[in-house]
Length: 593
Image (cartoon, rainbow, N blue to C red; front, side, top):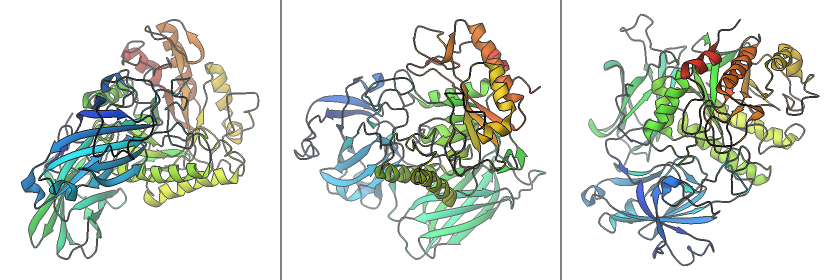
């Protein structure tokens, strides 16, 4: 696997790479705050001696070194780090958290530096002033609140504190990387990258930490080491937009497209300059990929694409939501490709950003989905809207992300079928996503009860292939909801007041066949099968039944791996296939007849 030019092994933010970073994962001090007294007692000044934890693993996991199933509403972390005092005299120090669930407060050397609400996205603090005072020594103290409340976006984390059905162990506190980097006094906070397949250009929207006269941005785009374009533009205010031509004499088609079959990536180097001098250099990359819908097809770069996907939940036996290593992320993507999938639906989880980077490299289309709340209140609106827009902004540049999914199966909006307020939340999420990203399809409510949606997605766990064929063979009536009565597990495809208008149709959850291949007990949909051969035969029949139906342009098999109590994966939780890889691939990818 060839990496992009800028990538550094272990770098937590592959889309925006600087020359320096310090990985702050590893052993931290850890304390439970059962009485919620730590802030009043100033634990950020006098941390209690309780135990230690291995960051970034949640205390509920084996990898953390604690492995407790206790439900804790408040936990604390502490670690002392020594930074280069000479750099602090002329540069700024940023502290980054890639993911911390759910409400986080941070102190450095006893000074409060900021807070963040949300469990799944990166947040950062400028800790320069707090660390300069001590000559580089930094005592970092983190307090995290987590609740069992249903208004909190929690995805597949059980609100009961223990695994039940298709909800799993909780994830409390730090569960993604913690790291730091030095930056100049004026620096780039980010660059939004938007390629255009229609005009063969790329647009950069660059943002300065603070405007100051005299700064320019030089952007050098290359492909496999050959320069494609170089532009220099002056900042006249804090935000700068500039376009760069992608036409290139090295290819007969003038540009290099990103697709799952040919995942071409362009390297780009951003130079922040002042008076002809480079202030900082940041490395990034992008792919020329544009996904949209046309008639009843999903289109990728002007060509219809049949999405053959696996549902992926991203859980591991010893580390829960946190991948144990970069190799584990790569291995999951390669496993999906080896099974014949060209896409994955990352379900109820916003992955480590390196996962999307590896998907970019390997050529794996991804649906990016918001972890759900489970109750509709005013707070649900506030929390879901705010965190979802963080998800979109943070992951916008990844070419592998083809589709956004802000809601799933009416979770958090249980009365969306009839309630105008809950329908309005769905519409608000749809249009807010479109306001930031007009290029990608948005699915309003994956599975059923859609409002405005670019793709109509349906979930159906019927285990009889003939019955599945009969149901969707009459696709017009299925989309009108006329053949749903009598199917107790199904919901109407559209919310009241909404109907089908020719959008692409994808069966985005089906199969889910229960098969206990190892020692783990559990459940799947319908009756379990008793042997590998039965598992493969049912899988083949179900996939074939969907592929034969005209008007359906893709499917998503539940699921890539077993998870805790679920034994409906194509592999067990340790990624051991339930049949030979080539046999499973043949069952999934049998050509349409």
